[in-house]
Amino acid sequence: MPKILSHPRPNVAKALDQYLHLKAHVMFWMHQEPKTLLLTSAERESGTTTALSNLAVLLAHSGYRVLLIDACFKHPQLHRNFRILNVQGLTTILAQGTQSTGWDAVIMDTPIPNVWLLPSGPLSANAAELFEPLLINELFTALKRRYDLILIDAPPVLDSADTLILSALVDGVLLIIPSGTHPRSVHLKAIHALQQAHAPVIGSILTQFSE
Image (cartoon, rainbow, N blue to C red; front, side, top):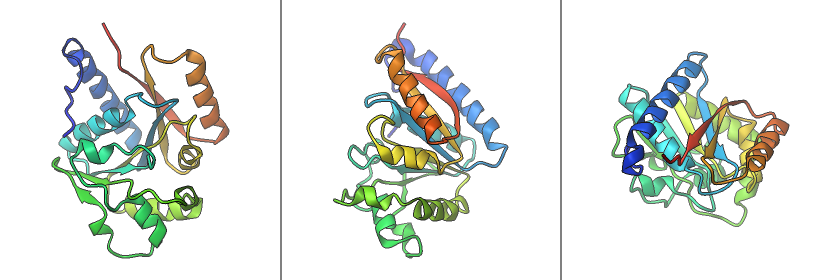
């Protein structure tokens, strides 16, 4: 189960403060009625899944109904965070079509009240082909009727064309930037790629900071 204090002990206070600021930023952004927020990074091991999980917990504690979607087909992690089997998920829905019934069997309850999870689902050979913009838009439209906020865990921008497709279909994008792990040029390249995709970037989050 994700924990707000799942950071090295000397950095607990700093991490909590960071997440509270992030929560306030997202809540202010939500006043404009957006529903879908994608979190991504330039490269792997940037703390995207941890940031998304902790943000969801904080928002859920404030009464928001939050759906998490794991769009990381090759390296899914959200189901492990919430101790849920990744048997069915996003690929299942996209393969069956948005008109299919039985979503309740695919969207899973989590141990956190007000937080639900749509796992990535089984990886298929044609997973990339499922990312058809019209189909994704139909899915988001249907899910927006059921949840206050949809948080999407996406693969790194520089590793996946799927992320660029998704980034142009959501209401907002947050870029995760791990402190001191990658050259500044890498993050600038990711920002440029998102801009080229006309992604609605609303900010960035610094993670993995040290004293």
